[in-house]
View 1 (cartoon, rainbow, N blue to C red):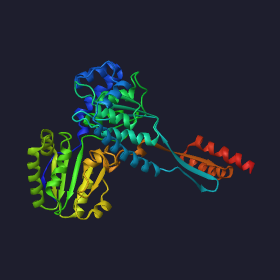
View 2: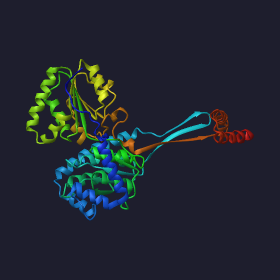
View 3: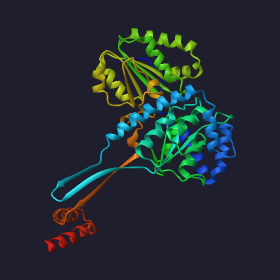
Length: 424
């Protein structure tokens, strides 16, 4: 393997300075409630309205102000997400089996009671993210969904986001961003009931807030600054690969951007295209920083090495611009979402096709997939037995407890052995 261009690693949300900042804010927010919310919202977003929650009149007015094409396109995208989430839900079946005579074991899926959904909107008003967390929660059967999204700095809310949030199925909509939004959802602050679960993507401060609030409530996953990796062989189009890399680089100066290719010739062609396309890119101020600071190109000997590097990197988004897509689909293990062939691209997954774009970053794909309907369900087990099965199981349990020295546990088994032996 040759590293043609070396960039930084992507564990941004684990930065100690970020952790300290978020910890201080959360302590302040829990102690001082809405006064702290207003302080931070005014400081960071120039936003301190009488109420952070939108009224039904404000929601209706925002939707009425939109071009009908925006509404139709949002409906199209949300229908795709809902269709896929409903199909996923159908795979989650209850279970009940008799493991031995008289022993019945089972599981069932119960939705969490309430969710706080965060729709990012700092650098860009990413209204498409509303459907990614709210719709799967609704399909799962979550009773209450609260939505939080940042204001357009100093100017209020973004109508397309309000439309997307409402259509996705949120019960209440708050124009509030970043750490204060997660604090309100988790602590309640007398405005809402504290939620059972937090979800949604965002910047490194959002990811750190979720990390620190985990335990007080559940979280979906740690989704910080975005990442893309492209695996390309010499059949790929360097211009198209460069285009897709920049498509993610524009998200955030901390975006991770990686290319795995098979030759120096392709690497040079792709970097040439990156420079050319950056020169004309409207969002160059962000994308160029991301590419220069975090971009990396690996030149590998073949598909085995390419797959090994990809699995070690564990990218959030992974595109395959290769002839042998079947090999990679079978071999690859660590990624958030896989885009197979040049016909599809991360933007399709982000905006419209139906799979979820809230995905693991910073190598979290080693141990979790992205957000989906199953994340909003608790799979709980139950057991029941006949008296005879309880007696037989109790005899084994009693002996196990004696070996461990757990007398009280053993007694609970012993009384059942005696009870059901006498009855027998």
